[in-house]
Length: 373
Image (tube, rainbow, N blue to C red):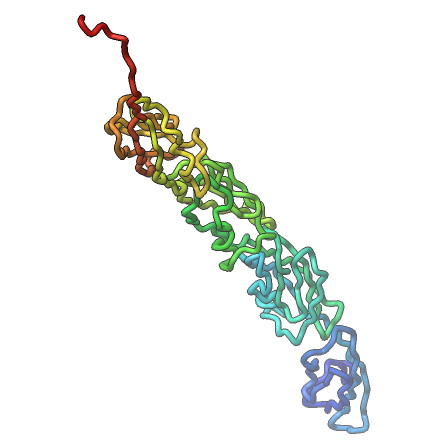
């Protein structure tokens, strides 16, 4: 400003001004812009009057350009997040974002974002992962805009690592199972298996297994024992893999105890047998013997016996009485052992009554005889 053609001496003039919008011309000639002023061009008038001559005045306009503060959305990284659970990713995108070089105050900005895949950036800056998200790395963009200047914006990317939930196949034990019958072992391998720390839901996993010996783990988790399995302890491995993450797997072992079927040799009685003739006693010791509660099939057992006196139990189950056996009651023991399980045996006794052969004295007639001779 000029007074008498030269630069004004501050003490020679008085400044008056009415603030306009965010602008104030102070009495010392400085101009102040109010805090939190929206970007734009603003004006304010001021008047200088000569101190010597208060009526000697002139008015001018101050024009001030206000710009938005620098804003910076900074990329974020979160995880690992359990994909089954999903939920909060554990970060707030505003925590590292800047407005005017300092950490953003949440109320000073608005957040906008379009969900991408399983990720959502919420309006409060939190990030949500959808439940049942497959393991992997996911991204979503978000934009922060200054509330004061809605066109003062910055965009960044959130990267979230999602991991598979922990999976655990737990060893199983079953039995005793009757080896002749076989069939269902009475367990389901999934009953004690865990996904994300809780009991597995069958539809959430896939079971694979290679049969081992008589054991098969079925795709529904049941275990089958083959018929006519020898008594003993058998094992088979199986693997469960998460349907959501096919490479998220765990393996366990099923141990099944198979026992021999009950076997029962039942005592036999035969006779009367003609002692002179002897021969077959008319019975088969297997006819009343039992294996697994039903009549023995001869090919399923082996007969052993030591002859006793006149009696012999043959390997086909028949009983033979020696010729010329004195009348009386005789016994002989025999043992049947299961062919499938040679140590699964039972012993019984055969009792045979031997009788004397019928005897008959017949009257005789002789003569004539010469009496002198």
